[in-house]
Image (cartoon, rainbow, N blue to C red; front, side, top):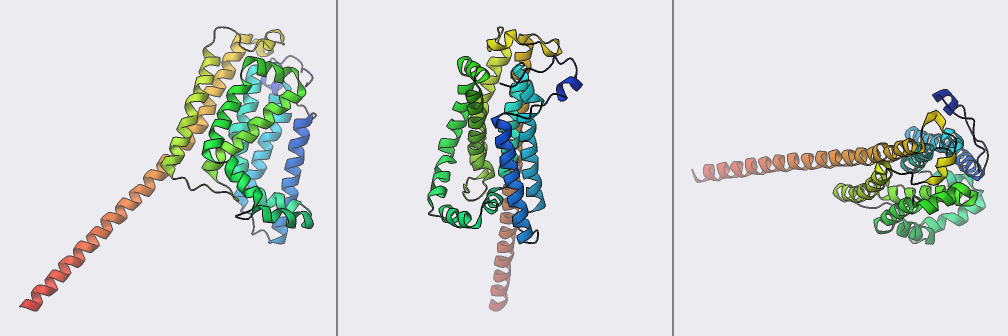
Amino acid sequence: MTPSPEVANSIGDFFASWSFSGPQFIIVAFLSITYIVGMLRLQFRSRWQAIPVRKMLYGIGGYAILFFAVAGPPEAFSDDMFFAHMTQHILIAMVASVLLLAASPLAAYLWALPETIRAGVAPSLAETGWLRRITAILTSPKFALPAFVLTLWGWHVPEAYSLALNNDYAHLAMHLSMFATSLLFWWPIIGPPPVRFQLTDPQRIIYLILVVTPTAVLAAIITLSNSVIYTPYIDTPHHFTLTPNEDQRIGGLLMWIPGNIVYLATLTTLFLRWFSREDRKNRQYQLNRRQIEATRRRIRELEENDKN
């Protein structure tokens, strides 16, 4: 487990605590370096035309968030404070995963591989390739949504949560499973290649609404509880002079408000996009009707002129 930091009594104390060790840090460092190497190789090969700057910034930003989550203060204080651990989960599952999917990093990872390996992997990503078929199954809404919700609820069962706090392998499994299922969950919304789901905006809206309720219920249970649910935090140092109950409420509120803001912001964006498209369709329909009516009037005028 991460060595317990000194008792934090200020924001400065909190942000001064970092942890550059452990398997999480090694995995994120490896993935980020591999992404950057592949991205640079592909960009140099294509004269900086293959990956838009916007997507490069998404990728770099996503890994920066992950790095902060697994090596920064959220990791350093995760064993001592529930709200630090919740901050870590939100950054991993609600921010970093979204940015990395928006970056469409597969091409960069392929170009990080040696040419012989890349040539062997590429066919599996074709339309009938085995890797693409497996990805299509795992990222389908019918699988991704329940997998994400069950993972979130499962790790917040007190016994499972306590196991993750007291066992490095369980802690790693918690964060890997949350990150993996969050990627699967957001995939039908963001839809990077090689698998794109042809969901309409109303279908995406319904898909997101289905996840808001179970996550909000979990956050409400944690926030409104009068007792400490996660008992390992009772005996940890009280940073910022917070009691375990206060710490738990802050963590629940973080899950409840910032976590659901991500869903609601996405819902709002999808609704506005859908409304805009429907409005354009309606305007085009009205324009077409006016053009048809004008054509009909012109035809009637010509017919009357011919009779006269």
